[in-house]
Amino acid sequence: MHLGAGAWLCQHLWEHFAFTRDTAYLRRVYPVMRDAAAFYLDWLVKDPPTGKWVSGPAASPENTFVAPDGSQAQISMGPAHDQQVIGELFGNLLSAASILGMKDATTTETATILPNLATTVIGPDGRIQEWREPFPEAEPTHRHVSHLYMLYPGAGIDPLRQADWAGAARKSLEKRSDDGTGWSLAWKINFWARLRDGDRALALLNRLLRPVTSNGVNMSNGGGTYPNLFCGHPPFQIDGNFGGTAGIAEMLLQSHLSEGDVRIIDVLPALPSAWATGYVRGLKARGAAEVDIEWMSGGKVKVTLKSGTDGRFLLRHENKSQLLTLRKGGKQVIEF
Image 1 (cartoon, one colour):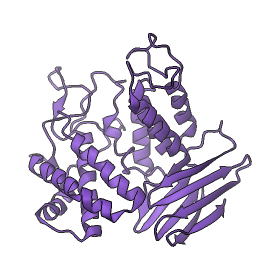
Image 2 (cartoon, one colour):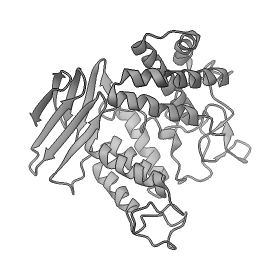
Image 3 (tube, one colour):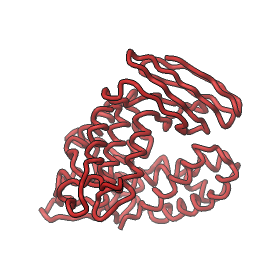
Image 4 (cartoon, one colour):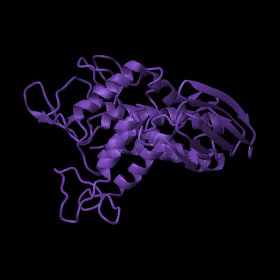
């Protein structure tokens, strides 16, 4: 019943364009995004109490809640995860249509429905609410944290400007605990990186890399990494490997936010205190940019930005920022 999976898959199509700005590619995948949006336009229904559009019946993978009658259930209307991924797909489709000069019945209806789509709320307990109603979880430390999609890989929370939402996300993660296996641990690394807590992200990365033997891992003991570096989510889960490396990248560079046509690039947004000095080369940023970073103890940071297209970038590091305008193939070195 994970009906939101199609919208999540379409996020990868848009992200590929965001990193490359390849309009020929975007034109090829546009029909997939459009038809996925058309499915959700047919799937959504109006929530009688609010008049907002909701997905359902649907799950918040793979969690279980306690219904008002005391029974345990997984299916409801409008869980936060579905609403987030569908809203993201609708927004990306409209952006793609604008870039490509496309307009049809699907984009017209999407533009009408999107402002009236039910959105995620902060619940009465101060956490991001997972379901449309503030149902208690049957397993409060369940390893899935699907309702924080808006934090990562989505771009719905900016800790620097939305302290209330960042606090609600942090409280949600604290309640869930640091337990997990494979992709769950990897996802939590990325969550804490987006919350700019590098030391917490590193602690989870170390849990993910904890050595285990082939017969020493199961779903209850938290997993780890086999001697060959495969992720120990029994028997093996590539999500943990890919997600772990994604988390390292998020600790060093983030580019998911923008202001108009200016792409914001945050340099070392979640650098752990243990990584006092270091360098990284060739990290990709949205906006078709490539970034090299070198940092030294004492706080000095050197950034080399190379642009694969004409673009404007706001480089940020801690409380300093610099606006750059680069032509395709241009390069600039900045020191903070």
